[in-house]
Image 1 (tube, rainbow, N blue to C red):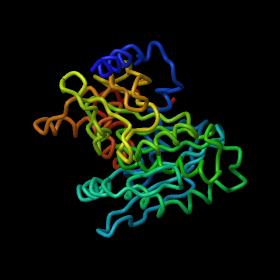
Image 2: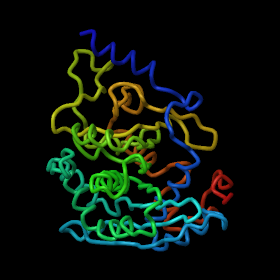
Image 3: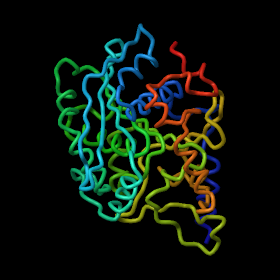
Image 4: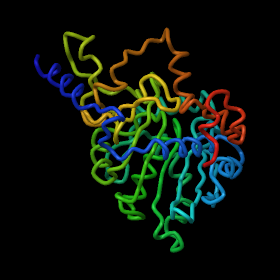
Length: 326
């Protein structure tokens, strides 16, 4: 009976605010990548990048891909951009377009598939990556970009696809895991505990940004620790065989994402599912609209709409100055 309380105590001690940084998470990088993730929702990602990046650091879209990724006609999309100044490739994935696509992701969470011997992942995410992968592999194998580091990013479904893409790139030897950076925003659980453990071994820099009570990072549900005191330890995820579990490090903005907001680097226990971070919430259907709001808003931006508007900062009512190029 003491184990749950010990885990909670350790987690509360280890979770670290941004004022005592212990990871390589960089909020400036996160904001730029969130803008790039938003651009994936629009039809002209280059327009977004031109508005977000200064003339001395031009981001060039090398390719865009849009493919049907399920039997109901839903599509998955990605684009690849390059910064010759920073010698960096950014592989960006779009989030879900329709409610039906979201439902299909949920249904496919019950159908885990092997992912290159790394463990089990959601079937929908593997299929989505498979249809988008050929042009990504082509760019990563291009000798012209051999010395470029690679960043994978995306919001929601895009974050899930970014995660499995990063794993595949490392697994296929296209880049050493240490040269891969992953930033996701509101991404769901991608695979099981074995996948999470293997992912963490090969890709040390993966940051899952979570805003407040965004419910998507808590889907599909993990296995919870059995206890008689549900209110105290009911939200502790355990590493159960073949069950959903997060990889990487959660970066939790528990209250706001406006400039200067505090955040927590969730490096406590259980690893990947820190019990002192967003897992502390008990979700209720009565507050579904609040959870949806948090999922769609990151860094004071309504993510899909911002991208569809061409990343025009004038569409941001609050704190637009925070998105002006510098």
